[in-house]
Image (cartoon, rainbow, N blue to C red; front, side, top):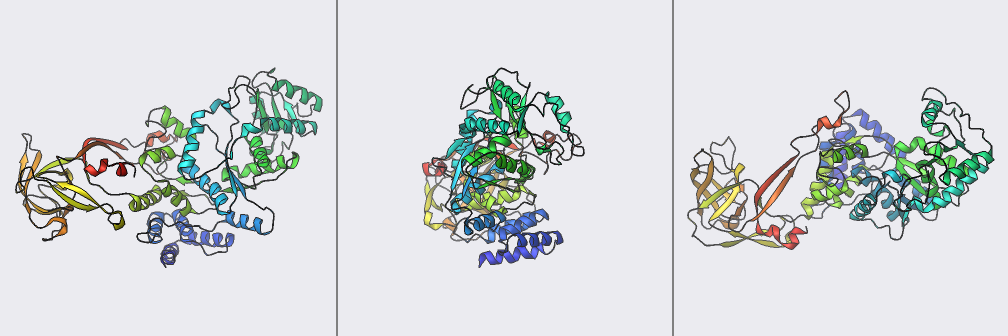
Length: 584
């Protein structure tokens, strides 16, 4: 079968790399099932053979004429969920996608979206669309609206399960009161600078705050004063009392509430003067919503002990389990929210939806179909192993999706006039061309053919190199779907630039009939052409790891100055303006 053939191809490539063999054995240990071809291609990516093997795998596993084939690679999270359902730990799977509304989503977020919503759908469970809105100074309704649009565009529906962490602020406050009363939290009056000093380093233990042993009554009174807005921002925080000597920095009495007296919350206005910290609010929201599997990327792995500590010391009806998977890292771009904001604010791009950006709205504007993103995420599989994927693998998925879905039209970006002197003045013949060369069920389209045509300037060479089979003086080519023509005369302007070709046509050769020639070029009737502006996009960066090659790490130094070329007055086949084509 096609998938088995693809698997054999991938295995043959992987055998060349010992490190990839070891990775394959590790994956086999985690998931006893036979490895899917897409998982193997991800391993090949880490051996720097991704571009060759994964692209071929994607091609081989897509049946001809059937479009992109969905895949369901084995992964350790699926195995955990299956086991939990089998032993009766859970009767239903509940997941969530919890972005912070402080920026636009990018291709890296798409992996989390597909995993969380995907498992919810696969196991007939529920998935919450939740905003972790605990930092009002950086959050805007614009981001909320954009995130919802992006998730819907990817094809996922949260139904009535749209929530905000701020929906539970009252409950968070009650839990904080419980922690203070039970001696698990205290109000600390150290300054932010002093707190950093007392916290210690990765190689030295932290030091207890002099306020750590405040009485319950004193901490309670201070916390209530904080909540009433009676204390200055930064003058105090509420901290958990865990272990200042812990080797895990996250367990060294982390702050769970800070003062923000003048903050305007997008959902709650100025109701609250204190705001919960992300680590505290996130775990409690998971518990309140009955999340069974809290799926997040590996940068939160060191936070899991704190996640579990909060569940151990706060009374909740459910106990979610945090599970980490590797984040999506791509070459030739940046996925850091801070760096993306820099690109927008400094004007290196036109906005968040600039078609060169890795944001989902940017990819949508560029014309990337959502199916290509889902296909790409599925092809990577799910593991804890970190790796960086070449951007070309994503481009292959885009190309595969568009190749199947996109109807065809001809367009001439840099026009050169071609006059057929043997063609009757004013005569127009309607030729017929396939809407899609691989999908005859989509039918045909009419293409007007007239005396004066436009061809691509690069399809003509006055002094052609060897094996150049397109237009040349005295040479013959076939006009796609049209006639065979011969170049008889080259017309130049006063500067010596070619401005027109005068040709004769061979009757009886339309639509591939008659004489056979090697060269086939596209064209548009000048009289009937639709005119438009075309933007040619290249990668935004000229280095695979932007900033990595510079001592200061400045990723902006690797910006590609030629990432956008704007061509005006391009000539397009009239069909390009048809409503069904515009919506394709």
